[in-house]
Amino acid sequence: MKVGNKAEVTITVTDDMCPSWDGIVVHPVYSTWSMGHHFELAARKALKDHLEEHEEGIGSHLSVDHLAPAPIGHQVRIVAEVTELDHTTVVCELAAYHLKPGGDERLIGRGRQVQRVLPKSKLISLIRRASR
Image (cartoon, rainbow, N blue to C red; front, side, top):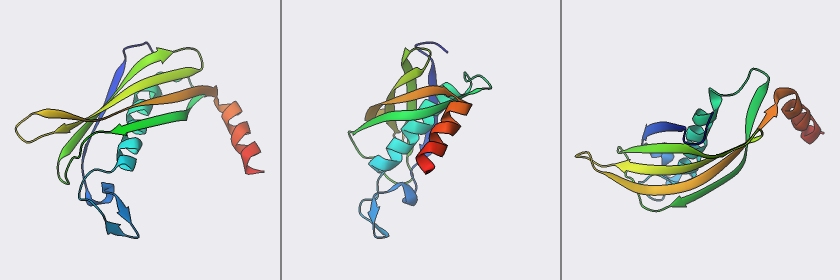
């Protein structure tokens, strides 16, 4: 693992990715919470192949700036880039691009995600403690 490593996730916007309340779709576009979910997936993808057998990553921060819409049926490409790294922390800067028909890309979101790398035994202990 090193600063500069990148990982990508590409999705097609579906109805269940739209903002909705009480089962009613409010806008037929990619929601901020879906973008946040996909930011988490891309950041995890940047980390997962670098974890040792006894380690696990856990998210500790996520920020999302949603800049523009992407309609249902269109693709969004999420890019995570490792920008900071130490023995227990991995920081990714994130960007979301609307892949427009015709091949153009438009930046529609950016953010930051922080993962802590812990021994699996420590993470299990923290989860057990939280369950009491």
